[in-house]
Length: 279
Image (cartoon, rainbow, N blue to C red):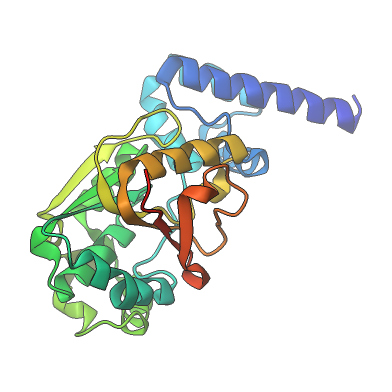
């Protein structure tokens, strides 16, 4: 068989696999970046000892217990606390002065992964005196990731980078004030999560669940195709209160979205946008 034929068969298998995953378990990855999905599923094939996507499809259709492991390959779980420190400094210095005018606040961390960004925001809001009036919603489609986020435990060898980012983000104390260390791991203070609701939520298939003043969804949209990006941005638009704020990843933008007119650049260099006042 020629390489073109092989590629064609693989593409067919990929589409059938994604359709089966959606029909059986309602996880919709059909609009994700194909190149990224192929790379991740090839790694999953190795883990499950499958030679083809068809074999992997057969496995997941008949072995539901394999889904959590599969999702760990399909969803992005690489993050760090205070990632892109200038983003958090801009939140601290430019966005929070606006949010301070609200009597109560709701913040949505969409695609929270293992919780690094959630903890970063919780620390930021505590230091700026806004924690007690804020409810955080931390959502992801990966239940294992949500459990990790709720536990707040990270490898000790990651903490040096976390601490460096925290200082660059304008931290007011030492990051070590917020965690305890033992057995090559650090556990962040449970009080940082006391005002957090953890929930399974898909930007692709689920709907708006709350009105919020800030959404932080960083380095998630880059894995979606244009249709899925627009659907997620529609959710964000509908979820944000008037003049609410949306933070995206450093390689993400609203510029080519059909919803771009609903937002204005607030701090474009850090990909922070503000919803326009009109509904």
